[in-house]
Image (tube, rainbow, N blue to C red; front, top):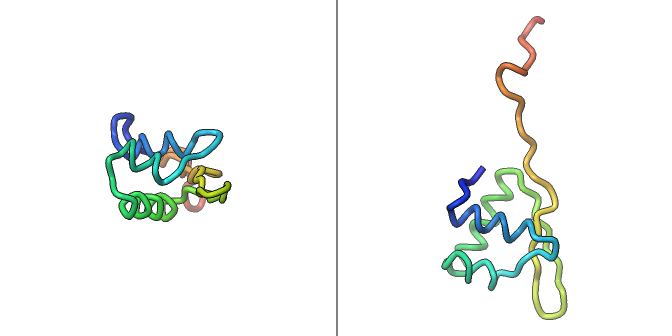
Length: 82
């Protein structure tokens, strides 16, 4: 999970909005170029985040639809042979 003061955290915040966000909004907040935002979205997807894309009029809106599954702590995992 991203720390609260990082660009990735800002990106996750935008993607978590009810109305979603656009590439332009993400580039404005992070200062990244559009290709870097697309790369960050691909990385989030590889890490298990589900991100939907919806075409609304002339713009695409991106939104998180599911968070990655968290693995139980080592102390909560069953021991082999138990």
